[in-house]
Amino acid sequence: MVRTDRRALRLVHLYPDLLNLYGDRGNIITLLRRCEWRGIPLAVERVSLNDRFAFTDADLVFMGGGSDREQTLLFRDFQEHKGPALVEAAESGLPLLSVCGGYQLLGRYYRTHTGAEMPGLGLFDAWTTAGSTRLIGNVVAEAPFLGDGVSLVGFENHSGRTFLGDRGGIRPLAQVVAGHGNNGKDKGEGAVYKNAIGTYLHGPVLPKNPALADWLIARALERRYGDGSLTPLADTWERKAHGSVARRFASR
Image 1 (cartoon, one colour):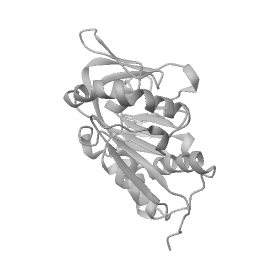
Image 2 (cartoon, one colour; image 1 turned 90 degrees about the vertical axis):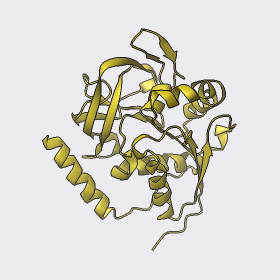
Image 3 (cartoon, one colour; image 1 turned 90 degrees about the horizontal axis):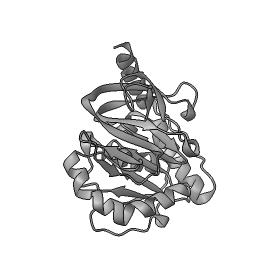
């Protein structure tokens, strides 16, 4: 029986028409369903080029990945109209999930093959440099901050090499068991800063990793209502699918 929850949340989906590589929109569906099953209304606001939005009204934000062309199209709009307000809200604890290109745009800069630097928003103390080859494949990574024995699985495809600094307690989202992660060298995958998450995991990431979806929902409820408790879900098939994928990827 679905519990009827008196709480309600509002999610902002940034650039849904431009940033949707590898089914990243499926992350929105997962958040909607996991809230619905608990009786928590989740309204989704789609915000794209030339739209104005006050992030003080948001409880969750999602920003997916896109090709270089799409990122170039939205770069100025994000830098001038949405990014600064989003960073201010994230600094105050707004839960945020950014994937691949969205993750890079929230770092300090992206350095191209020619040495030119595209400035980021600086929410994450991280920077990205273009690599000569792409890091492609399935990923298994341990994420102990989500609970003992919790792992993340997903698919990565990126040429950028992202490195984390040490400002403000930023840390990797997970430690790679199989795959490349942020840069193929230090075994870190993604980043966590306050309630903001950056990751290279596509697939999309949340259907494959319900613990991460619930972490975001709980942080949003805690910030809005002071109570991040969630009704447990059985997740029988989700756990079986996750375990099967994790074992198969790790064995390779």
